[in-house]
Amino acid sequence: MRRNKAILIVFYICIVLFILTAVGPFFLILRTSLQETLTLTGQKNPEYTMINYVRLITQSKFPRWMFNSIVFAGGVTVVKIFLDTFAGYAFARYRFPGGKFLFTLVLVTMMMPFAVAMFPVFIIVNKLRLTNTYFGLILPMLANPFGIFLMRQFILSIPKEIEESARIDGCSEIRILFKIVMPLSRPGQAVLAIIIFMWQWTNLVWPLIVTNTEEMFTLTVGLAGIPSQHTIDWGLLTAGAFFSVIPIIIFFLFYQRGFIEGLTWGAVKE
Amino acid sequence: MGSSNRKFRSVIKNRNAYFLIAPNLFFLFLFLIAPFVWILFLSFQKGGILGPKVFVGFANYLDLFQNKLLLKSILNTLKYTVTVIPAVFIIGMVVALLLNRIKKFRNFFRTLLFIPLLSSIVVAAIIWRYLVYPEYGPVSKILEFLHIGSPNWFGDAKIVIFTIVLVELWRGLPFYIVTFLAGLQSVPQEMVEASYIDGANYVQSLFHVVFPSMKPVLTFCLVMATIWALQLFDSVYVLTRGGPSSASSTIVWSIYENIFFFNRVGRGATMSVVLILLIALMTFLNLKLTRFQEEQIT
View 1: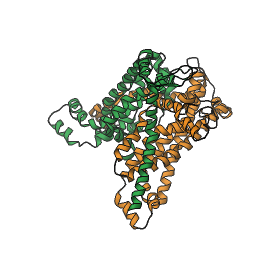
View 2: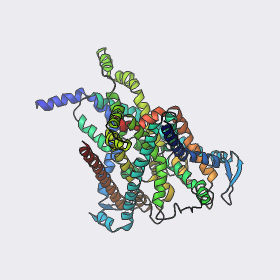
View 3: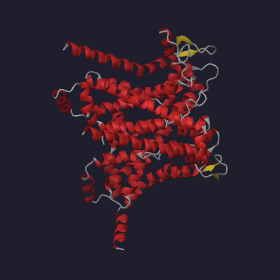
View 4: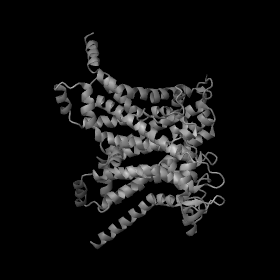
């Protein structure tokens, strides 16, 4: 018994050490962001101050980048929720000519990396005159098959009978979709929303290519480009880094079941 | 006539389905499928981003085998892949097994462990560039205190890929820990206990009972980890821009660099085709490999 207890204590120590490496860096940059960087040496003034956050908000485009990230990630998420529920519903409930082929096509596109498509997509967006606009940011990111698959699987797990009895009662197909299917698939939509929002909030490559003025940068592009001259302004950089993860961490702490279910979903529910 | 008539009637009867999937298929076609076909064509051409393109046959592909920089990018990507995958599997599984053994605070610990995944690679890069910054970065200070010299994390061509591995691991591991833990919890407890009764020790029971019964999870993680590793870009862009002297250039970095910096679309397109082929090959190998083990066990 005593030996088991000793082993358990060792386990706890290992886990706590591991957690320190995972979470500790956030506290270290929080501390640095609260100290002024001395311009000549890059060293820190040991006194705590909010000056870096004030500079971040008043002297950089940070608030604008935050706004752009919210519009970009939020926009993709809201549109995808509707489109993927529609498509998922169609693949789950209708038997139609070409359905199997189209669904296989959706599965195949899951293997296509965006890195390969990015140049032609850039040219298309350029031809549509959407470079450096919110539409240019959002529209290409709607081409993501993951949610179709997720919503199809989710809707397959909802009993058919509710829709069928509504149909017998003379409910129109559009009413069935909006009054029955949409509300019933809300748990699946929540998981999907979290995954898509997280992907786009951390997306670097597409905003990097499609935006070309500071006004249109997202947080990722803006932070990656904060200039570092002779000495790096760590105070400002860490303040920006910390400020940009805080919204998503708060969101996560309130709704962590959705996050974890969403991420493990693809692996465990085969 | 009869069958095509019936098919036509089925299309009409199910027209709602077509309307429902049309918007999604439109975007998939315009922004994913068509660009893929287009890239194939571009890989047989030479020309700039907006300039006229000339058909050159297989010249880009032949060029690929003579261009040391492109070969180096491919090699770096493979080096990164074979380093990061065993690392996420071993470390991720050890932490998941630890978490699976404890009962108190398990969910609380899992929540904390998850947090690095919420930061973008840009944020992770800022954090780690600060932590290992010479002289006053906290990690540098610790190494100095222990009388271990800090390596030149981003400037040493031999080390830089492994620095990127460390940053990517710090951010990416939570995904594997949480997924492995979910897999471990789905293994029927009776099977594990039965193996102990049959005289298996902990390690034997892991390899003969636990891992085989969570194989879908492991296969999924292996396939995804490979696909993601082959597409390494964000951390290269933020941390090193491919340097020093291309020591951290990857396939996607060289696609980006050739097209958007050097205006060499054909070369970028050819590297894109290399990426497609590598992903297809590796996914095929992964699936083949895992099935092979399944036959061995049963």
